[in-house]
Image (tube, rainbow, N blue to C red; front, side):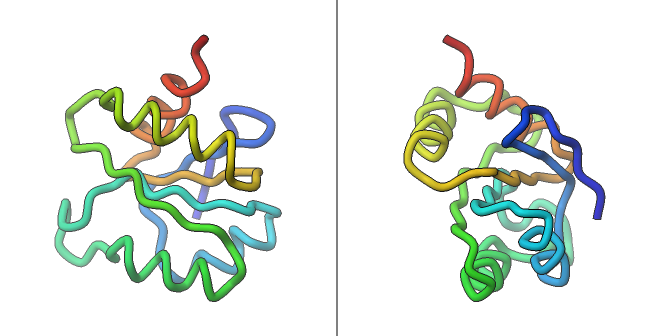
Length: 111
């Protein structure tokens, strides 16, 4: 699993697996954000499966799906702002490639 830091307390990556959860926790992340809707690709782990593993490891988990090929909506912006304001950081967000997660963060942190 590779990830990219886009801010001191926010990183993004492509799709993760349940087996990546220990490394995410070990890297110091506290909140895991899923920006990928379930069922985009055959064999993709569900948000529920990732969330259960994240919670079992002591991480906070939230799903804020963004449809492929669509810009994050104002609801995604508001939900991401709420996460950043209320849940513990640092934050690790994922989607298929990391792009939608980066877009959601950008929208949420723009003035």
